[in-house]
Length: 272
Ligand SMILES: Cc1cc2nc3c(=O)[nH]c(=O)nc-3n(C[C@H](O)[C@H](O)[C@H](O)COP(=O)(O)OP(=O)(O)OC[C@H]3O[C@@H](n4cnc5c(N)ncnc54)[C@H](O)[C@@H]3O)c2cc1C
Image (cartoon, rainbow, N blue to C red; front, top):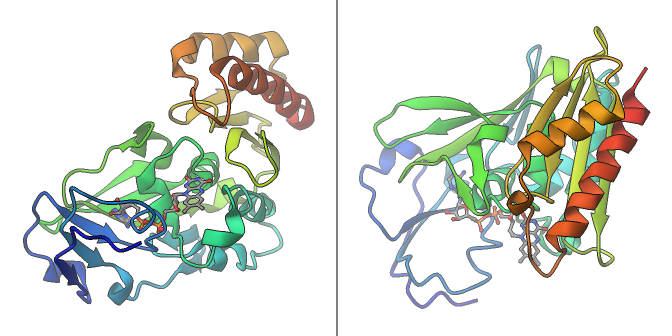
């Protein structure tokens, strides 16, 4: 799409070259959303491509995903054999609406910043206890768990001019067994509910992450042997009925039903 309000496109080679920030500026990553509809409040695009960040870095501490890592690069990643939770990567990469159309351009960071309930990179990185590194214009940086970064439908903790630099997935989370459940109303449709559970190999505690059904991610930590009633109570207590998303891809009532159903399935699958 031609963006008729854009008057300037900047291609810096590093964040320090972007000294000023104004309303109307936007970071450009894959552009799959930016170029998909008119951006009437945007006049300047600042392309992140020239920053040249290495897409994926494996270390003893886990996996560092650059914000500019494209979905296709993440999907092609060959994880070490003991990273059993890496099995979530292809599942989540295939959880975009019409995945194949945007895979080659859309980025992990762009997906987080869009902060749509059905953002599958939000599902993946929050379930794997990801922590984002955020860079501000004054050179400072801060870290925030992905589950706290996304605060609502299309809302997040980014401040004006701030940049998502990377997402760190800790080694311990990557080694956990997992259970994955997703529902869409149509084939290749937008996720109506996407729930992921992981189990700590040491104490069998379960981390349950609810996404897509709700306006933002919700996370629950349960001890080994948690009962279905306890899981239901936790969901009841944390997610009010008006926190379930209402749009053409699913009603709040159906999303709530799926959330409880999948949570119970995950509890049973991961329970020991
Ligand atoms: C056919 C189609 C299907 C889609 N399906 C889905 C779907 O199922 N789920 C979903 O969540 N989205 C979906 N989208 C929306 C969008 O394409 C994705 O969210 C995608 O991951 C956005 O990434 P991008 O790199 O293309 O972001 P861009 O379009 O480049 O940017 C999106 C927003 O994020 C900001 N931004 C990007 N990177 C950064 C950064 N590192 N730091 C700070 N701000 C940044 C931009 O300024 C902009 O506001 C779909 C879009 C299309 C066209």
